[in-house]
Length: 567
Image (tube, rainbow, N blue to C red; front, side, top):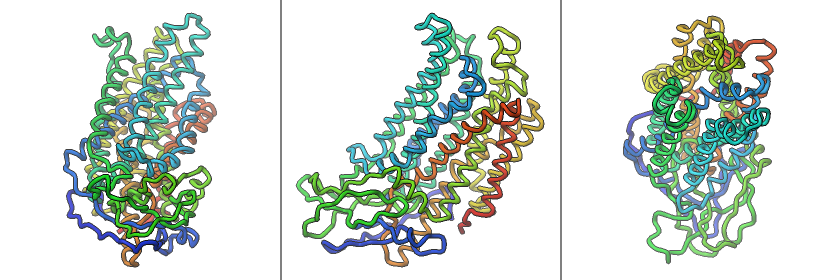
């Protein structure tokens, strides 16, 4: 078992080349005690070998991880200002949590489908980067509307009643677009890493992702904690929100570009062994079974002509199912295997997951529900409970000034959270030999649950700022431990398949990433649908950290009982 390990020696696995016309079929998972019979017999058929990608330098892995700095920087801006901005433009309190419902519902429905589609994207630029670029542009559009919508509406609309309505609509649209794209982009980013890296590089890459995620959040909250309204930049650009947008857009644009050009991605149609355009291509995927987790609905495939199948694309080993390199490279349109994932087949695939994968998704759902419940409304909690301000008061009143001050101090608290997240990513490596991955998972949830309960019970400014460090423990846990557990599950299963003389795992990393990360969208749906009503019922936002604590501590029990231990 490994986590965030340093360089390790890597040996290539031999390719298996069948005779022409023969089908090789295998189960997606070996017959172990944690799989269903129907699941075990529903494998993708394939003809390919497992070849470990070459090692990448530390510099390239860091460049690849810079996108997480930019993403988390923008996420920090959204988390710090979305509730204050929505309340300041006049959104009713009873509706302010519902803004989170639209984006996660779309994400939950589309994430696995798009993740599967990226497994078979035939762009000359690679499978993942076209999706990352498109979602990155959508994030930028969302930022523009979210942070500038009120100012734009004020310039274009003169009627006061219409001005408030249009401001709410534009800001909400920006929040939905940004949140949808920012959540969605994580799957392709992880799949891109797993496609181009060896097993040890994946773990090093996840480490740099966690580190830069924490640093990006720290800088994002730091920018939000500063008073830009009376600065030179604030006077030049018009307002505090325009200054924050300038830094966010610049940071995101630069680091997204660095990420996209960090590590070359092998196009799906292209085989690195091809020496020229005249070399004939072969159909790499044979067989028709498709009932299991990660399997797709296929259209009929025309017969493949005689001749040995030798055009095999290198395939990564383990970690989140790895890159599914099993697709047709035949140039003739009538002889190409077409694959689609429908919502029905996606839900069937998720239901057929082995129990330890399903339990991991449930624990991930509980963790993100607790984390988002606290993080999305933390600055509002600081403004209303700790500083006793009022977001609905007149903007030149003392009550509103206290609320704004609370939001700024809340940004400092979230900055502490981000720094502790980066530091804890290193602490994990030292704790791992003593308590293991499951122990780290439990510690993250328990620490967060205990800290948020103390924040809700004792809302003192100094105590709250100190306890903000426990948020970082949870953040680092959610971004690393579940993915490392899946990597170890996959490695274990690969080794079992090798002992049985069967090909490796056959599904794409896009589907595997989506199966786990769509739990984030489902968590947002639960928070958006329930937290607003809970706040109204309690009559105070103090219920927010207390709810996060209850869910997190329940997650501790679930981890202890159901999560599979890995040696």
